[in-house]
Length: 395
Image 1 (cartoon, rainbow, N blue to C red):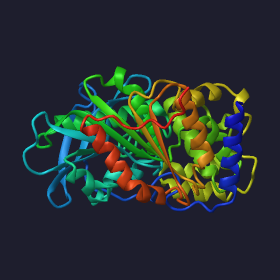
Image 2: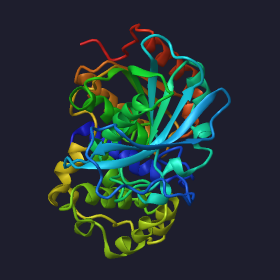
Image 3: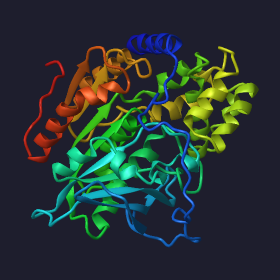
Image 4: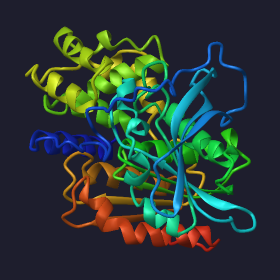
């Protein structure tokens, strides 16, 4: 293991071992699920073929004042190339759009779980609860918020599988453009936090090949779970965080059938992790945390296909695709600063344009509130076509 990665892993294990995971660990959207009695999420069988981002259906939902919102079901693509349905939400300002259309802000949410009940769009107030939604509407953006593959729709959510997440984020933006009444144009901004930071980074990496018609201006990644190679074994060493390792193992199996969780996780953890099939993130964290063993995962490095797929789903092995703003709290005990420091160093070494902002004393959740004004200003700069700062060291 690279020396910087080893230090980051040590920091991750230390941080997780000294903190009780909060209800918002690894994402501002962690929850226990909320029911929806409609058949909105039922996918046509067979699913008519259509291009990624094409709408299957849309339904109006409650929106913030001065806006309109829809729950949407749209086409996307799995890691192995299958056409699937993904759900989400679109929110747009009222009134006529400017010439050329409104920029789309595609939001990538944090960890909720891998079961259908954990889909954020099932919350009837979701349109008003999206981060910074009123600020984004005031700025004239259309907000597209994917649930990701498998949340709300058939199948298990491929948790922290970058291709799946990134495609969901990009196709949500496409769906917003195809929805009558949004006035959405081609300009795209991407913003995600925690798991969503990972998704946002992958959306940037994939955009050129997967969605070339969109004009990606920039990507904001808050406390991103960028390096799954470190997070997967690191979280497994701490019972109170091992639920994340179980979620990753089960999520990866959904995308890679030969990635058998039983090849790495103990029988006790596998049994406890069954709650993930119907429960959400907190349920899994609680259940797996009660197993009590600190030896929860096998030898990842020597158990194929795990080394290859964990590396493949760690961000930064391809060009970022757009300028990056990375925000991180120094007191984050879920995605520790050392982990993000190391990843930003990797991105800088690869030649990406990165502005890295560190917030003293802020944790995994409070960093977003502290960074709010800076994030909005950075996005506005790009939306206006202006250049942003690069804090990477000069070679």
